[in-house]
Image (cartoon, rainbow, N blue to C red):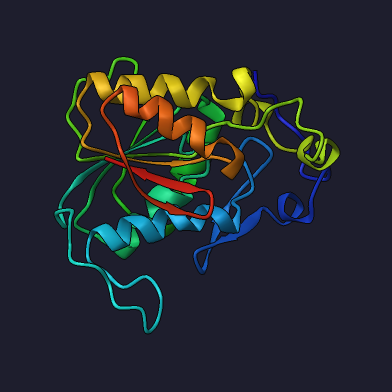
Length: 222
């Protein structure tokens, strides 16, 4: 279980209580991950699906997702992804979930800060979810504790619940793909280490999903 940690501990981001993501500052504390630049690719992918430009001078693709699409984010943490999407595309209908009550408190603080209407819920992946969604996005725990290239000391200040997963870091991702397949979610955007991408694509194929795009750490499956 995630426990409270003093603001005086750990990275300067936690001491400041704010972290940058997609050009905005989000409230963070040791109950949520520090947003990473590579996670911004998830936002880029969604905006591209909406036919919106995500970089100056980059011509957007033809829209493949309705402007008022219903999106579910699993494991929202600070809420930075869901809130950014709502600010960039206000017509989106977004539900954001997390298994941690303390993380949801941080997400609520950020929704209040930016004045956005996002439905926040406590949930374990898609357990208990009965609604239909056009797109599901998730930056789930995917770090394998056996990876020798990971700086465990640096990560020790962040909640292990949001970082580590069993089965080579893929247990929760595979479970979520199965749930999405059962509920016939048309498209998924997942973040994972590139060394896991082939395994994820192969597993997703068994649930009827094909790889549409890779962008850094992010995978679009449909």
